[in-house]
Each structure stands twice: as C-alpha cells, then as structure tokens.
Image 1: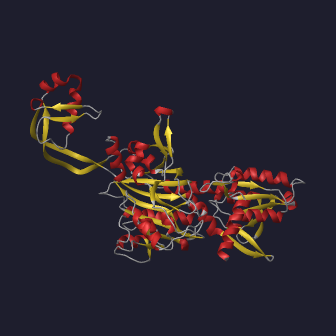
Image 2: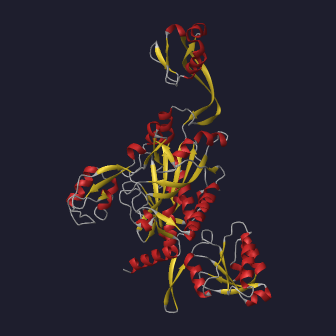
Image 3: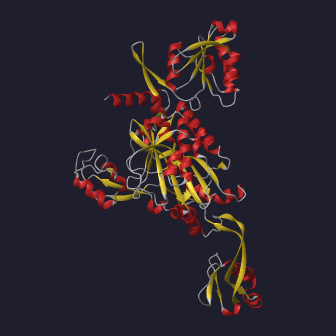
Length: 572
C-alpha cells in the first residue's frame, strides 16, 4: 500500500508541476498518449541532448534526421509488415480486446514467446478472467500489426506507408551517404532521436507503454572480420548481467564488462562496449546503478533480425522494465534492403594487406558482334558481363540490365576463358550493432529514482534530486520581494546567467519564499539564489542547495564564475 501511495503522490506532483500530464484530457483523453508540460519538456530535451552528446563523443559517429513517414516497401524489406505483430484476445463477455501475453503475466514465465495456439491453451487452462468484466470466455487470439498505416499522395495515386515503428530504417536508407561522409572507411555510426509509433493493443502503466513515444537509436556499422578494438578496462565498475538461462552461463552475474567479454558471457566486443557505454549514460543522467540490470534474450525471444540482444532493464514502481535494447543485427537489414531495392550501394570495402591474384572464368564480349546487335546497349552489356560473379551453365542466357529489361546473350556474342585477376580488396556487407533507447521510459525512471520524500516540520516534503545536467533549470533566481529594487536586481542576475552557454535559469517572484523553495525542490532545480536587502548593499545573494537545504552567502560575481566553470560545490 505504501508503494501505491508513493506512486500516486509522484504522479500527482508530476501533473501539478507541469512535468507529465494526460493528453487531450478535456476531450476524454487517449490512452497511450501523454503530454510533457513546460517542466517535463525541458527535462526530456536535456536527457536527449545528453544522449546525443554521449554517443557522438565517439569520433566516427554523427547525428542524422530522417522522416517519420516510411514507404511500405521499406518496411516490407525490413520484415516489419510481416513480423511486427502482437497477439490479441477478445473477451466474449464485454468485447474488450487485450494483449494475449499480458493476460498471462504472473501465470507464465515468458508469455511473449508463445505462439497463438499456446497462448490460447494457457489462457484456457489457467482460467484467465477478463480484467474488465471477469468473464473467462475468450475468442481465439489473433495477430495484429502494431504499425499505424497511412498513405503518401492523394486518392488513386496514393502510395502505401506507415508511421515509423523505429528510427533504424531511416539510418539504413542513409548508409550510402554515411559511407561517403566517412570516406569509405568503417567503422562508423549514425544516431537519431525522435518520434516512433506503435498502435498498442492495450496501453498501460502510464509512460511505460505508449502509442507515440520518443526514441534514441544508434546504428554502428562494422567490418565483421575486424570489429573495433576498445579498452573495456576503462569501465571498472561491476554490473548485473542475466545471460540466456538456457545458455552456458545461467543465473545472475555481477561482473565488470571487461570480465563479461573475456569469460564469454558477452560474445561480441562491440556489444560489450555498448553495454558499458549504456551503463555510463544511465548513471550520468542520474539513474540508480543498483536498479539497473542487463538481461540477454533467449533464442525464442530473439527478434528476427538479431543474432544477439541484451535488454537493459530498470527497476521502478512497475517492476523491472526494459528501457534499452542492444542488438547485434548482423548484416540482416542491409542485405534485405539490397535484395528488395536492387541497390548495390549497401556494402563496405575491405582492403587486403597485399594484393591477391586469382584465376576465374569470364565471358569475354566479342565487340564486333555485340556492337551491331545491341547498338546503344552494347557498352552497358559489356560492363555487366565483366561484373558477373557466377557464369551460366550454358548459352544462350538472359542478362538482367537492372531496369526491368533483359538481353539474350548467345554463343556468338561471347567467349568463355580463364583470366588472372589481381584484387586489392573486396566488397562486403557490413554488420550493425544497435543500441536503442526508449527515452520516455528512461525519463520516467529518472523521476522515479530521484523522487524523495523527507519529513519537514511534521509533513512530507518532496525533493526531486535530479542531476544538474538534466534538471529543468540549473538555477532559479528568487527576489525576496519584487520591490525596492530586489526584483530588478534578480532580473539582472538572471540575464547574466543566461549568457553562460549550457546554463538554464528561471526567475520566480510569486508567493512566499518558502513556497518558491518548495517549488524549486519539487521540480529538481539544484540551486536557488535569493536576492534580499543585503544583496542591494553588498552585491551578494543567499545560495541554497536543494538536496540538503544548506544555505551560504556569496558574491554574485563569484557565482557567475562558478556556474561558467560547471561547479558550485566549492561554496559549501
């Protein structure tokens, strides 16, 4: 009950202070959608900025931005049109629809791994009752694609499309541009933040399961034969890892990321690197490291595109919740898009240490025959014949020109012979390692982990102990009274602080100073500067530290210098 009470008080505070609120409430609201108010939007923006800074700190990683509307052909190639489904079950009593695996939570260990028949069997065998009306009569579970369908263009000329369920596909589409940008040299990566959309069957748990949500993803392209070398010893702290229970390392392991890779718990060095980088980011934005764990997907749980995947789960009011997925997507996506689009631009180049000489059979074109017969297509056919990797067993055969047309190649047009070819390198399909972050879930857990209630003067007093990097304001300037020059001085101080790059300042002169301190503490402002009568005489203010309520007197000029240098702690 105490836990439920805390949850209620946290939600009430977030709503009252303009952090997170229900969307479209005056029209009855819409489940699975939330608003970030003025305070919440600032926190979310600073978390996203911190995320971008964290990953673009890798020298060969850049930010991109691609559309949220995605043509159907792209998502057919990626597998989302056919694979991106959840099973739903309809209650025969009240006709409400629920996610089938949600009905089995607490009944089956991994209900999201079951197919339709097994879901129906478990629901029936366990006598699962409808959460709405209590009936235990259910229809047959059926798959529902979670993407929002839309169209590009008007009426009969419209092209089928979807609102993107992830940002990843836009980055795969930009691979040729990234390859050129990085001078054809792997590894390199792209990051993207923005909206994703999933038409959840039964949204619940507030910000945990949304229909429109904020994502942050990176696609890191590597040569699978030469993954980047990273010193994992840089991250010396231990983390909780839960490998596949059916694999060689069952059970819970508290171990450093370096040891996890050396022992084989984490199989790929880049995956181990990104696990460590993820833990570093989560601590940077103020999450409790004691409430973080990494869980490996079992074989039956693995996404269709991944060879390995680890979820970073955070513990909060809703239990352990997946907030980050780190997947080794191998070459699945680039190969799929190459096959479906016919593009040859989704490859990397691997330089050999020394040239290689190979003998191979070729079909050498006979120009005196091909020229007169094929005329304007002769040069294109000659080039394509030279690029053939697998020769036909017999002649004639049809040569695909790549534009939907074919040309028949006959015996009189070519000569089969063996040639020696010197190769200085080879093309290959890069592999991709992807860390994908659910920003809304992370923001929620930041608020949850940092929501503190202390007793003050016999009452519960709320403090949101946010790290300064993600607080809605770094500092709030509070004139004791908005008269006698104090308000004017406070506004002048705020103007000076705004000139410091990266520092966000608020000014508040409404109601008593005690109420204003409480407002600052509730929304997580780490520093409050109070302007009083002494300030007008000495050029000093009272500096109040949020987390322990301590106060000291300091000159405004000293405070400005300290804020510009990134620390105020030396004052106390």
